[in-house]
Amino acid sequence: MLSIASVTQRYGTVTALADLSLDIRRVDFFGLLGPNGAGKSTTMALIAGLRSPQAGTITFDGRPRAAALADGGFSLGLVPQHIAFYEDLSAEENLRIFGELQGLRRADLRARIDAALAAVQLGERRRDLVKTFSGGMQRRLNLVAALLHRPQLLLCDEPTVGIDPQSRQAIFTYLAQLNREGLTIVYSTHYLEEAERLCSRIGIIDHGRLHALGTVDELLARLPFDEEIRFPATAATAPLVAQLDAHGTLATADGMYRFRPHAHTRLSTFFALVEALALPGRLFTCQRPSLEAVFLHLTGSQPRDSRLVIALANILVPPPAACQPRPPAPTALAKACCHSS
View 1: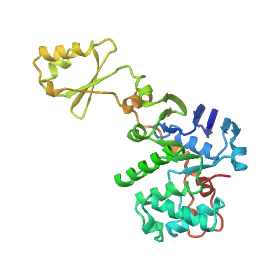
View 2: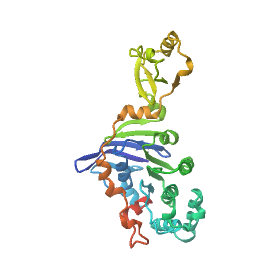
View 3: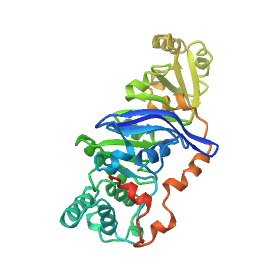
View 4: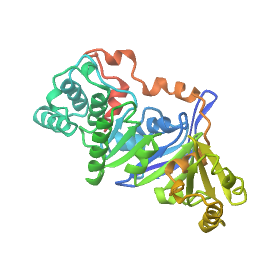
């Protein structure tokens, strides 16, 4: 459905994407993971048409992006990371603007607005001003605005940032339902548990390059260990720690040791050491590796430079005028958020 081939994008001296290639299949629920500044939002902006790639190509169903969108043969919706609404208008008025941008009119538009507000439990607040909504309510409205025209592809750029658990759960449930009904979704996030829960395939991007691609199980297979054994960091376990260097790697976090056996180390070897020291079994838990372990293994644990995040501000953040009532013309971002032509 979507093909990104050898795309490179720079902002001044900062390289946002470096020869990125990626294929999204029809009805994928694809997770795009990466640290801050990894290139996730740049990828979303290029797919949506907010910018053109400096090198490389983006195609929909084998056709160049611009041509596929221009003749109405392909439609997409963008849920931006930053709320894209007119705060001094009601939820219903905002959705009417987005719907009319897509050519929806009269009874059809009214029906779609009714269905959209009901889907995210905002029907009773339809006439309230958006500025009176909680962050979670605004996020839910942000989502359905991108769906009024029933796109074939939905781009979600960190759609659950800073919201309450109930709203996050509502968004998860709705997106999973839409995917089951045939909607292809590209979901950008740095919340690893979201990707692990929702996505059928995941790509891990860092420094503008794709470092890994596959299902959760396929990504876990890239780790140099199969299990992680956790036990408390106490005086009682210190003699055990002294004997583990030859058998695996050991890390400490929150008062707990995390032991990761080498590929050739059997668990029976570890527990033989435990028995020899007469340590109670209740101290130890053996856990399957997580997506977080894969992510840190591939990207490291150091915080990232924020220069790329700042460079993207002029692309993905609505200008102040976008928050004023009834602007003379829709902003470019507003058009892109429900782009289908």
